[in-house]
Image 1 (spheres, helix red, strand yellow):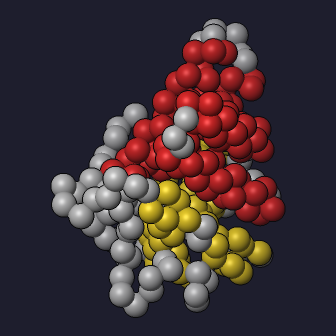
Image 2 (cartoon, one colour):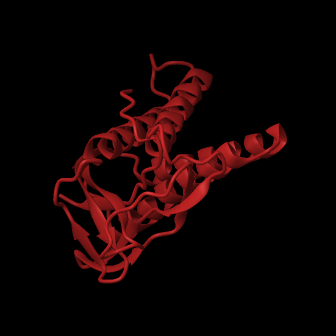
Length: 206
């Protein structure tokens, strides 16, 4: 099966060491070519506390390996979806840090636009979490070694996948589906759960 990988940085639920102001923490996704990783990109995600993946690789960040079923997407589409999901969650981080309601609303609308583009690009298949690991932008690698944060990063990934599935249903609008506004609200709630789980280091089940 084809695979998508996005990095999901963790943040903050610990009762000590948290800061009131958001900080930037690595948030990674992979670009592949002919099935091989050619580049790992780790743009920052605004969170409440820096995630520390290890002394040997400060720029590394958590990542999710995605399964596609039943349709395996072209690699170029997988790469664009990786970037789109990372960008959408990053913009939700900007929304969480915004100091005015108009700014928050604008960021949230932009995030939904990005997630909707991902849903449109992946019509015909369903994304699910295959594996959680650590992405390394220095060596362009993905390490699937289990770590303590696998549980809430994996839960965030499942919420992302559920949100994308709801947007796919919204775009297809089959008979008997919930009203479009209901689907959009449900999808937005799943994406919010994904970001909150990462930002607070907690498992939020959809």
